[in-house]
Image (cartoon, rainbow, N blue to C red; front, side):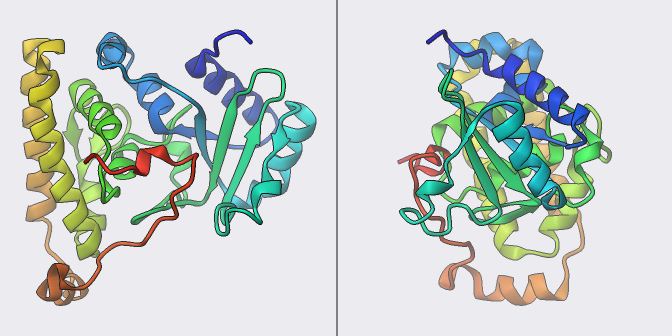
Length: 264
């Protein structure tokens, strides 16, 4: 089989889905590669490999999605694995191309992992990926952050500023608002931003000096926005308990979720 160009495949699938009346938006490593074209060389130099394509979609399109992949693209559904991996297919579709071996995950309405990242009325904000705020949240929600995720976030911070709106800017206001209501998500995210900052020392030789400065500044900016946003009563009540009570959801470890592996 020929080597798969995951970025081009993601763009082609998203465009074909649009023609079929389905909104598919890439997430995961392929989305970071897509949204940071000027940092591709760094991403590659970090030895950040791509292995599949993940998409977000709306649950209302579930039947259309199934027909699109099975009848339109001639992918095979992997729902036969459902009995072996309970919970794997809740809010999720998994497909594979018999012709190329390309593996595709579809997450419906939300990414439900250590913390929940909702896509409600947000998929139209960007294309062909989910918005930059959700790309950030996708990584910040991981309790056991993987080295791959550190690489993705360093590239994202190098490529995009943090501000109070969407587009080519990471919407820190949107992120901070979510954190202000959920202490568990706040705690995981702020710890991870520290890990990402520390991870820069391992790869800063690959970035241009100005990008190293951008990464540092943008992490500081996002942390500042999160800390400065007034917190809800629910947040304050949960903060008083802290880590004495588990603050995240347990995630079933499966072969297709290697991004959840412990960084060690």
